[in-house]
Image 1 (cartoon, rainbow, N blue to C red):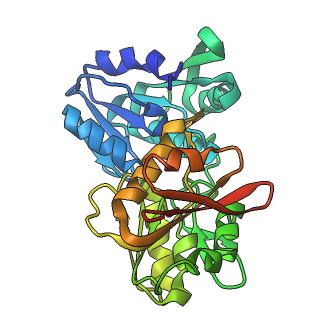
Image 2: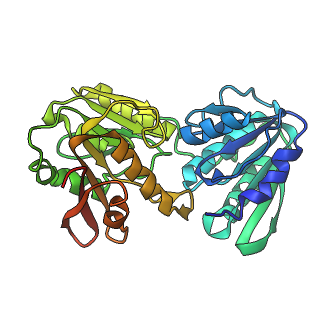
Image 3: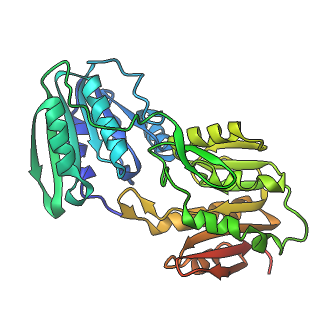
Amino acid sequence: MSDSAFPLLAPYIKSATTKSLWLADENFLDANLPPNDAVICITNRIDLHEHLQKQGWKAFFSDYDLSIIEDNSLERVIYRVSKEKLVAHHLINEAYRCLKVGGELILAGGKNEGIKTYFTKAKALFGMGENSKNAKDTWLAKLIKTNQHSDDALDDKDYHQLRTGCIDDRFEYQSKPGIFGWDKVDKGSAYLIEHLDSFLMTLPEPPKNALDLGCGYGYLSLNLTHLDIPVTATDNNAAAIIACERNFARYPINAKVIAANCAQGIKDKFDLIVCNPPFHAGFSIDGDLTDRFLKAAHDHLNEQGIACFVTNMHIPLERKALKYFHQAECIMSNGNFKLIRLTHKM
């Protein structure tokens, strides 16, 4: 994958000489920059946090909680806009709070990603700005904070507040912006749960534990409660971890949540793995994501266990899965999604 927006920001990260902040999310991709002591990085992705720390950056993992940064204390904030509008609104507002008068927010993104709208809204908040078009309809914008107070904050829908994202016949799911599909029940996940018994009928005995790989706000995990087994849920997104923990606390489920990238660092193996894998990284489709989730399932599945995947019809998961499993069988499809059963044994 390549990203035409992030390289526009790299010179501003490298050249910072006074107290600066780099906001990194999934659009960071595979960029490698030498650490700059003048810059701290905050990311909501545990994999990016670990990657940056290994490189020597002063990096923090959170759901974009910028409370560690004082008001009016920064000279520069660098941000490649996020895929979700409310995340971008939240971070533009926080950049304004953290910057000194005269400080600058450097934004980059594609025309089809809303960069021009973000620039227009941010300019009203900051008071001064300029933008320029680069290759491939990618834009770089520079905003200058000209006042201590503005009434033009962007609407972030109270970003940090957990709220009822959706409800079904069994649960009320607490969720928030910053989680993929945060305000709905994903149709693919619902399809998996609807036909979970079709997966389980091949097991020689009921599963003794389960792993929810890429748990989001915890929909799949909560809908395993009738199995009465311990569940481990994991995600690399800080907002997902927060929401999943809240949902587990509200219902009688024997479960724990672990922040991890594709279950890295989780030592246990499981009789049952459920997964609705993503195939987007930021604004890009990432074919390698499917392989990473398949490898994680392989590494964490007991010899006699099953992994239950749901994916879009166009994802060649069965073919990819045979690199890691002895058997990859589509047990059901509905024209939009397919259910794939993965096992180590034929």
